Structure formats: structure tokens, C-alpha cells
Length: 130
Image (cartoon, rainbow, N blue to C red; front, side, top):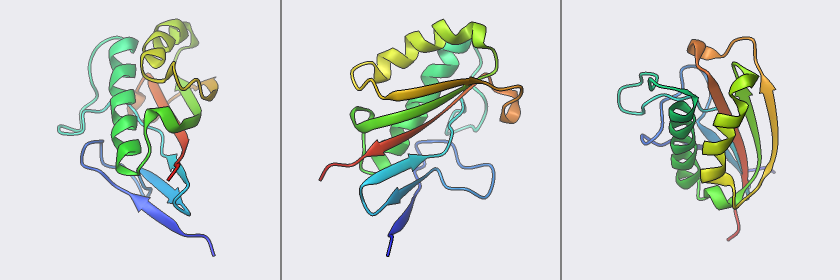
């Protein structure tokens, strides 16, 4: 039987719907929900350009990964949703600061509209080595 554990941390924004920040499967695979550029304390969207928003997204992802027993180094797959593909290079620059060494597989998609009209959302899958 598969063991599914819901992951929750106050160091990342609370879910805005009926979903978990992440789920841990059999203590080995951690799947995060998509994270946007929200400040976990205020719940407000971080103002600024795509770089500033991507930096907040990555901080939120890192907090969830750590809460689930993973890290940025253990990420094996990400999906990036961008409001405007013209901002790919700037997003990618910040993304590389956080995940360049891990170099996970990645898909990047331009989305017509993201929740709360944010500019970037990223989700991740990590493998936990114990």
C-alpha cells in the first residue's frame, strides 16, 4: 500500500484551495504544488520584476522541499509556468542560481493566465535519499 504524507510549512504561502503544499510518497518522492511569488507572512504577491518574483518562488519551493525532507539538490523535475515567454531569460537566470547545480529536467510553458495574475509559477519533484 502506498504511504502518502501531506507536507505543510508556515515558511511558504498557505494553499489557496483544497490542495497540499506538497505530498511525500512512500518517503521517497516529494511532489510540490506550483508555487507563486507570494510572501509567506503577508500572503501578498511580491512586487517587482520577473527576477524578484522568481526569487520568491524559489524561496517558497525551497521551504517546502526542506519541510518534506528534500532539498534543491534533490530536485529531479520542474515545471515552470510563465505569463510571458519573453521573460524566460530573466527567469532562467534566477532559476539557475537555485537549481543550476542540480540541473533537473524541466518543462517551461507560457500560460494564458495564472492564479492571482502572477507572472511565474514553478512546481518540483524531488527524490529523497535516506
